[in-house]
Image (cartoon, rainbow, N blue to C red):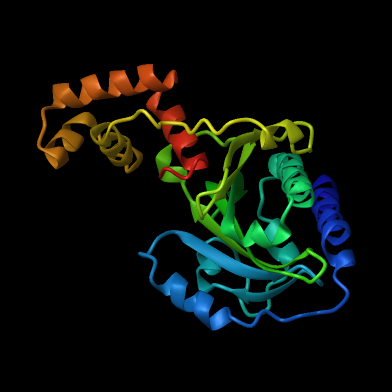
Amino acid sequence: MLIMERGISSLIDLWKEGYSERLQKHQPYQAIQQIKHIASLFSPGDFFYFILNMHNLEMEYVHPNVKNFMDVDPERAKINDLLEWIVPEDMESVRKKEMVLQDFLEKFEDPYELPFYKVLYMYRMKDRYNRYRTMLLQVNVLSVSDNGTIEHVLSVHTDISYLGVAKSDHISFISLNGNKSYYNVDCSTGEFDDSLFEMPLNKFGADLTKREQEIIFYFSKGLGAKEIGEALNISELTVRTHRKNILKKTKLPSMAELVSKCVMEGLI
């Protein structure tokens, strides 16, 4: 328990130093109703989200779905209440991912372009029913202060346990408006590698055919070769052949690793 408390404290201190101390005043987020409306258009799923004010690390809104994961009151929840459900063994990994995220934001040339990026990484949690879940965190910057510091973020947490993927120790920064993306960035040093800004974009799966992408999509939903064949009106043998070709093209040993990589690159 002490190790967990230290991990949470270290994470909070990181955010305070990187964001809170650089924001001179508290500024409530003005478009919460619009965010709720957009979220209501999503198809139902096992997820929750919240809006975090980086000035004081207060939650300005927490979606009621959080109760499906944690024994917390969304009306009174604090950021610490949510962090406590992360698997203790993952706290250091989460801290390093947040360090890389913070480093990326500081090195990014135009902070006002940050709302056009989506940040993804995975972590594990133990829910209120003592079930382990692999979660995909997607972060979007909602607003930036006059001095270029992040003010508000939207944090969406989705249960991807059904995909059967191993937790990734990488982080991805995906552009939403056609600018350069940075996929599966190594987090072991806690720093964003500056050389990635200069490297040419080599998007994973660019040479996959439409049919191969369809097969990956259905596989990620837990369907077997026979079920995929029925869904696409092709034979089970054809599906298996496609699967072999997909693994050969992507140079990955298994479909599970392929799905994990696709998740981290925003392809699923």
